[in-house]
Structure formats: structure tokens, C-alpha cells
Image (cartoon, rainbow, N blue to C red; front, side, top):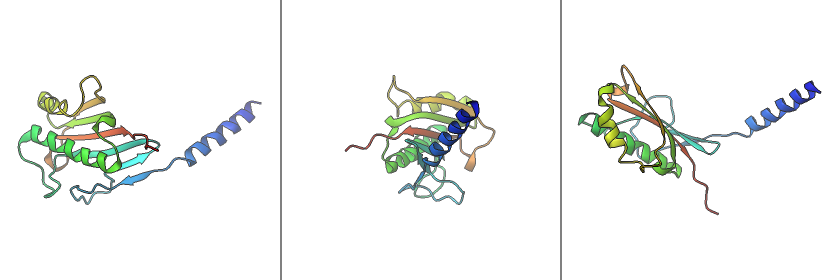
Length: 151
């Protein structure tokens, strides 16, 4: 009986895994990157947005103005990916923030909270990192629950 249960469990897991799929989100306006990653991936009702920094989509260069300007541009870049996938910042359930200087936490936080509704902030972790891509001050990843399509 125990072996039958284990066999049924294994078959059940293999069916649920084989039913999973992923859809790559290609941002309409995003800085070109030579790196091997997708801006976003939709899988099983969630949108996973790759790490984004404050690069200007037109020039591909980091915006000037320090952590505040970079935080604004980073969130704008993520917002574009969310919208291209059919989601919005309201759908974000989890955020990871990487700061090259943890002393910038209050500055980043002041900008960050302008983009989310008080009382329904996403879950979040903030991590100090020794060095970020392009010498940026801030990098963010976000995960959004994809909204149900209207019938």
C-alpha cells in the first residue's frame, strides 16, 4: 500500500510539473542588453521580473542623480515590463531591493513608497551588495500575480 501511494504521488507530481509552462515577456521599450536573461517570465500565474537598474531605455546608460534618480528609473523600467505583460505595480506581491550602500536605504525607501499604495505594500527584502551592474546604486526584482483575464 505504501508503494502504491508513493507511485501515485510520483505520477501526480510529474503531471503537475509537465503542465507548467513559461512565457517570455519582451519589453517594448527597454535598454538593449548583451546578457543572457529575459526581462520577464510568466509562469503559473506569476510574472517574474529580472533584476533592473536605473538605465535610460533610450541610451542604455545609467541615469544621473544618485540613488533617488536611479530608484525612479528602475521602477519605471519594471513598470514597463509589467505593463507589457498585462500587469501593473498593483499586482506586485514581492520585491527584492539590492543597494550598493545601505546608507541609501532611507532615500530609496522615500521614492519606493510613492509607487505603492500604503497598507498594501508588497512583501520585500532589501540586501546590501558590494557592487551592482553598471556601477548602479540600486537594483530591483519584482514578482507579480498576473491579473485574471476578463471573459
